[in-house]
Length: 551
Image (cartoon, rainbow, N blue to C red; front, side, top):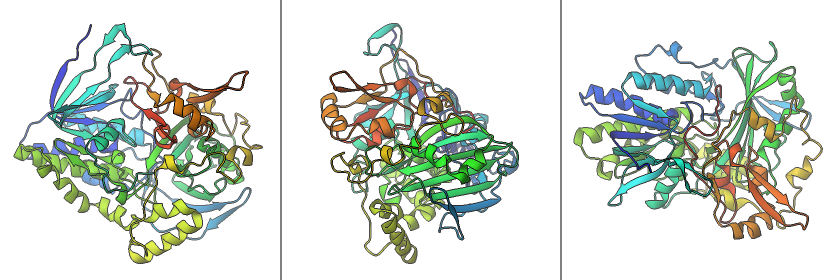
């Protein structure tokens, strides 16, 4: 039987996205400037850095100049500079070009990019600075000593579906660190536990999320130019908050997707299928005409804003990036904020190492650095905008206007949020036309322009080891059957963008949930949106999940 090995490091960074890599790079630079030699270890659950990274992405790039001051900007693998930036209001078959950009939503000076490729580039830069990066390792447990964080443990492997040890059992490694940085991305499973254990969200708004589904296409030359950017509002969304995006890339590629707030009420709403309906609009279909699907993915985004940020530190630990909720609304941009948060965490860490003090008393500097950075500048003026849309588009637009004239304060002060899982209505309570009924004539995929979930999942490169405990768990099977299935109609079968959840009905009409965890793209919507006791998402074996190359 294998026993857990212990690895010691000065800094453990959990997650190889933009925030984790920025933390590593900037901390390495600061420690070198201070003449301090410290071990920085970064663990990434994807098979390689970038394989679990998905974003639009149109990026505000100035922060990269601060992160990499000695690098030629042209060397960073951004794709195309934005040359055209338009907002379109869609009806079922028509469109109106909005003659102005809504405030905060201009992309002038920004670049399109594959965030996965950006992260692979940043990983090389980090390694050049001495950072140790280990992809393919899933971290499943926080380690504590006398109630304080002392590191984390990687997942045990070589177990069957019931948790029994197989002949190839390998205990996970204990990684003990003076300082642990949580950079897991949206709804990080360990970050969630950390926030709960230390009540870091006390007095804060509930974090709310959106789900974005995205495809990358190769299209004939002339369909769309590199740097051509479109955002859409309206069709096929009705009461839901969200919209579509189309980004022209180099080499006749186009990234497109639909992002929908998870605070919708319809228990049958299906973001993946809404995205397929959106593609049938003539404006979108003409851009894709003659093209081919290259890649597919899905990701959740934290939209709660400034009032939903948890306390960002405890003794020996800090939270960065999407795990904390650093995303600017309504621009829906978080990459530059993730990088900035990593840099502020690195400054805090460098000070802690100079004092050899990793208590909250030192780490509380992180708050001050955040408030003195572009994060505060981007997030604080928009602190009330997203909450206003919970009451519908009209109320949201009116609230948006009041925020603009009051510097974000609004006329009634801080607006609250409601957890996404609590906004879903029961089938008996929802009085409007259900999603799968209102678009029933548009949901049959043609496998040319539109695709079913199984086909799209194939284009995500997703893969999971057969022998392991399922990483998605129904918390209370009995209440799930009586509440989620019978009262709500099993929303998980609709909101899951990769067909993990299937409702099987036997000949007697009895319904049961079947879980296909092997399809999971790690968007964590199930952990966020399931009503009642719901579903918990945790990490599978390291290297499992999607394998995005160009997203």
